[in-house]
Structure formats: C-alpha cells, structure tokens
Image 1: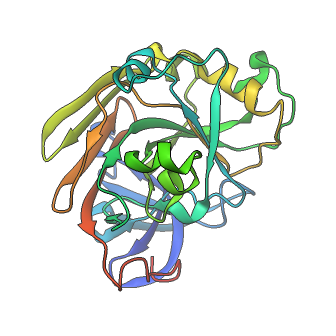
Image 2: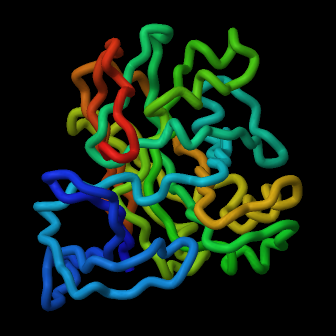
Length: 279
C-alpha cells in the first residue's frame, strides 16, 4: 500500500489516505482513498471518500514525533568521493523534525552556506516501539519506506566539528511522496536510487551497495536509543552527491516507491514562516 498524508488544494487540515495509481490497473486510478486516524499510531477506517490525486497537495508522509536517525558514509563510493574513511560501525547523527518538508516544498538555501548539497536516500519509517532489537527481528519494527533528501551544507561540516547545523537546518529533510508498506526487508535492500538535478542524472546507485544493511542499522540504533512509531531512519546516500543552487530542482526516484521532487530557493525574511496548519 501507499500511505499518503495530504491536504486539499484549497487548504484544510492534513489527512491520510491510500494512493492508487494507474499502474496498479485498479478501478480507481490516480486517486486517494481517504482514511480516518493516523495509521502509524492506531487503527484506521475508510471514510468512503475518494480524492483525485491531481486535486490533492501531498505533504510529508510523516512528521516524526520523536527523531530522525541518519546514517553517514554507508556507501563506500560516497565515502571515497569526499575523501573519508569507511566507518567500521554505522555512523549515526540526528536531524530534527523541524527540518522535514514534503514533496514540492522548497529547500531553502541559507545565506550561511556556499555549498548546499543533495543526498538521495531510502528512508525507513518505524511502526512499532523497539529497544535492543536483533537484526533477525528488524522487520517487525518497520511500517514502510519512503524517499529522503539528506540536504547538507557541506562547507559547515568541518568548521562546525559536528553536523547539527550542516544537516539539521530548516527544510534540510524532504520526505515523500508517500510511504510504501508491506515491503520485505530483503527486497528493500535491492532498490535502485536515482537523483537528478534539472533532469540531469547525478546519482545512480542501489541499496544493495549499503555497507550496513537495514536490519543491521536497526540493531545498531536500538542498541543505544529506543525507536518509536513515526521515527525515521535515513539509510545513507550513494556516490554522486553535489551542489545545488537556487532555481534548480532536485528529484530522487527509488524503484518501487516513487519520486520526490523539491525546488531550491534563496533564503529570504519570509522563508520558513509556514506552519503545520498551513501545510
């Protein structure tokens, strides 16, 4: 299933629904079947209402209530392209939930960086609480998968000595377009990831190149912190990262999930003034 979080084009509160695409060859192509409740934390029911996909404004499919745990240097070629050593254990860092935006929302290019970069990644959405979970049981925690862009102010990583500002600034975590559920963890380890900037391919990798696969990441993360429903894990980016500037558009496509697209805009006094109600 594809679980979307959306608002109507005319506004209103965010709602959840199940997306049916034309490629599914079902009875209701390119529509959203509206559901009640939050599928990440409780039971849901169909309302009977169905919205044309073209008339909905897709939002980030999840706003993490707790945390986003990201993995650095999880692809050997990416570590090499930046001149970094390959970590022997997963290199983890956190991104705040205030960095999250949805499909089509602008990535703000802050004035404090001259080297803003894209990083296309597979994101794991957690559906159950878990602490000290062995790799063999990692599937039990997973609600589904979506796409992430681990936006990074590359020129701040070294001088800041840590990555809070470089990777945690507002709009630095686009997620979407929806969450795909019921994907076996082994299948998620063999998905093609392609990133384009203004239509030009910049990244072309596969999750089977991860140094630490998804099950191992969950075991590692839950060894030191409890994962909660709605938490998100960013699993690392393949080689080909690069700079983006205002006026460009970044699209990340992951096989079997979809495409996440965001424009890049210059910082301004009005940037970042939107609220969740406005989304």
